[in-house]
Image 1 (spheres, one colour):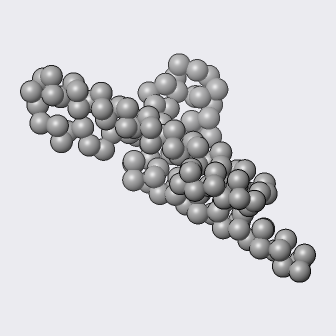
Image 2 (cartoon, helix red, strand yellow):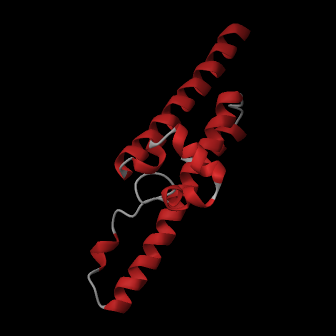
Length: 124
C-alpha cells in the first residue's frame, strides 16, 4: 500500500488527504515490519527450543492487546495519557486493530481521490 500511495503522490495526486494517507500508510507499514521482525525472532526462539513453529502466529504489533504500546505505556507519562484517552489502543484484539488501519487507509484514499477529481472537474 505504501508503494502504491507513494506512486500516486509522485504521479501528481497531491493534496492534504494524500499526504495524510502517506503518513498513515507508512505507520501501517512500520507496524507490519515490527510484527514481522518479532515473528522472525519468535520462530528462532521456538526452533532453538525444539517447539512447533506455528505458535509464532498472531503476534501483536504496536497497538492492541499485548502490543508495544500496552507493554510500554507505563514507562512514559505521555503514552499513559494517550492510553487513557483511547483505551482501545492497548486492549483491542489484533484483528480489530488491522481493521482500523485498513479503514483509515481506504477513507483517506477516497478523500484524496475525491478532492483531486473535484479539482479536475472545476478546472474543466
